[in-house]
Image 1: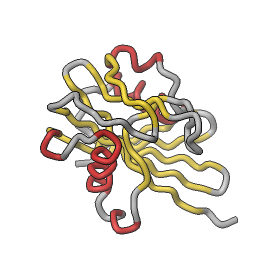
Image 2: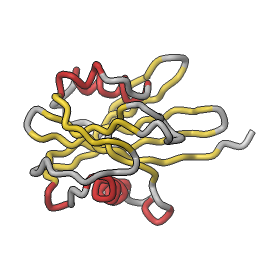
Image 3: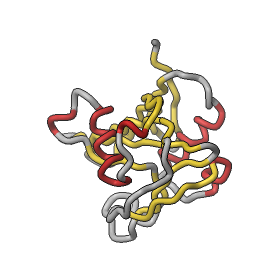
Length: 159
């Protein structure tokens, strides 16, 4: 069996106690109708720089530009095999100096209180990642999460 790889980036942008979240359109192929962070697929020329891909996706989906984001850091790399595809998801966290966002055809953008995100219906990987983040909010580490046998196995990359 040949395995293909899907590489994506995502960003949780914070503004005070709120996090920018997207309620994905019901017509989307990936995670229709679910809540998600902002992000998308890494373009072929971006594979050497997931951060560049993430910044591009943020600008495309929200209108928030790089100079309006402070402290954008890679916090998670999530891995999950789904049938014959390996999904790699690079998740960044950063602070947005603006709450102004544009309309997006991927879904509807909302600023959600961080304390209420656990109640949102998200993909299993993001839900487990958010739970882990809530338990380790100030770790400063890059965490790997490998989904296997119905659970997420966490590891920490050395700095």
